Length: 174
Image 1 (cartoon, one colour):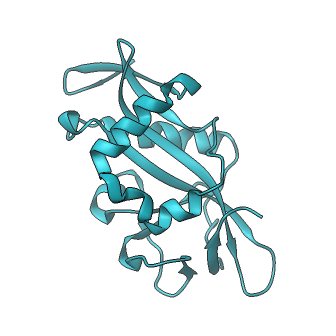
Image 2: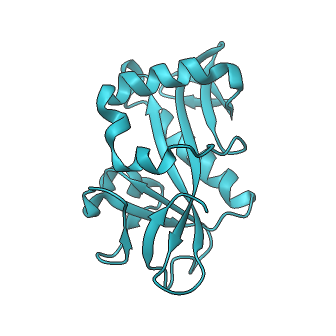
């Protein structure tokens, strides 16, 4: 059980029957235009990773959600680098600021590390995600398949050195 500012909840794997509630939280948190963003285009026709998708649940009610997706970074030459794309992460808007999102990220990152993943990327607010260890991708190292604010492209090495020498286009798995 996790406690954040007087909320008692469990962080657990997302179940198939949670999908409608998860989508509802994402819709309320990000609005109807969320599917137009470049990060969403990387997720089209790709299955999120069931062994990493988590929810924060209190008395059967989903308070927040986090998902991870497989991606690859395709260099001009050489072998593609597998990675994870974190997102969306969303918390019921009425419960924001209570630490649920950070708790979901910490749990998801720990689980990804345990499962042998090496690198996580996301597009998001640096100040928020830096609290769990993300930092900016150096300008010019990676490209996205659509418009993105590259100051918001962040990385987290789950294995030290996992980003060393990585350059290329972020893409769906091949």
